[in-house]
Amino acid sequence: MDQKEKNPVKEKHFLMDQQDKKIREQLSKIRYKIMVMSGKGGVGKSTVSVNVAIGLSLQDFMVGLLDVDLHGPNIPKMLGARDLKLSRKPDGKIGAIKYSPNLKFLSIEPLLPSEDAAVIWRGPLKHSAIRQFIGDIDWGELDYLVIDAPPGTGDEPLTVAKTIPDAYALIVTTPQEVSLIDVKKSIRFCQKTKMRILGIVENMSGFICPHCGKPIDLFKKGGGEKLAQELGLRFLGRIPIDPRVVDTGDTGRPFIAAYPESPTAKAFEELIRKIISATEEMERDVLEGRYMRVAIPVDTPPNKMEADINKADMYAIYDIENGKILVKDVIKKPENQDLLDFLKEQVATHIILFNPPKELADYLSDNGIIILLTDSPQEAPDNLINELIKVQNQ
Image 1: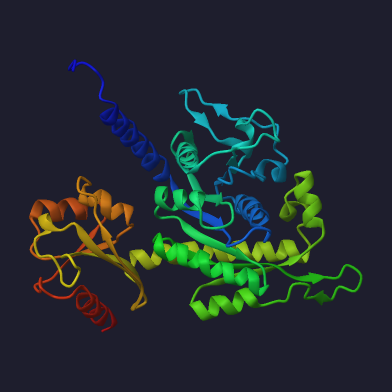
Image 2: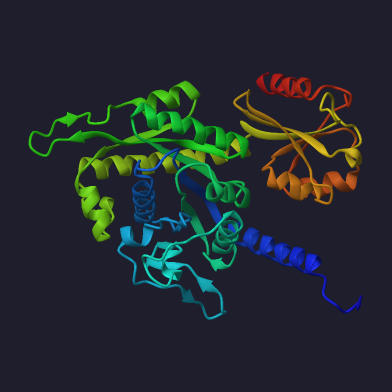
């Protein structure tokens, strides 16, 4: 074989590494990332995404709105921005589409040959497209990136969860029991992918009669709030039905800006205030230690801690919030993956180690991973975590 001949495997890995680097650079400029998701279709998820993004931008935040619903992109129409195109910056980078001074958006629709063109893609193509939307498009400095995902727990939400590991999930439901059942699947998805849940929104919650002004519960009311209480999640608010929501969506006039004095717009404003408060609170929880994602190197099977970090290829991962274990999982670290990259991919905040090499400890600490030392390397990981919680609660 000619030594000068290109190795396609190495070249592929090099290109992936380059894209990973670009993605990390882009995400480092965005303070909060929120994926708006739902367990089923028809609950008004895109309506919530658009009005939340508009509302945040009206609060003087810099906002990006990313539509990763590749098969049914509705964001450009709902914004009335189908004629707007991607822009090329002086440095050659392609920028997201500018909707207003404080809001940029991106959807696959402007890239299609016609608005009714069907996107017939399998998982790998969708995965690649979403990574390009994040890494190859210059979003600039943002306070919030709102990501409108298709319903369910398929390729698109999974790609976002893996590509943006510090994203929060905003789950939209309606009051009906059939919708609430599917919400539980979304919550399970978040637990499995280590995505923190910002809260639950109950859309289509009651209807304000335009004639008498009294509320009518067309689709019941309060189911989303009750579910949030049962699961210990934030309930961020309920959005009442307004028939004009349909008209504003069809004509490209976001409701919150078109009818700011309506009860539904007021409900969106309250939702936005709670989103701002919740994101800031969740950020403080990490900084002040109320929320931790702790990694522990374990043996195989994972009965006890692995004392020698160089021999560890399995890690027990615990989500701890306010002194309680929320999620526990055991993950295998890929053989050739750097430990820091693995921990960042798992969004770990802490790692428990026994007598780590100083160089490794400094390397992890310098990159934001807090080292917790133990002198009990043969201990079961559950016992180490329970001891950590006990110390926290003192």
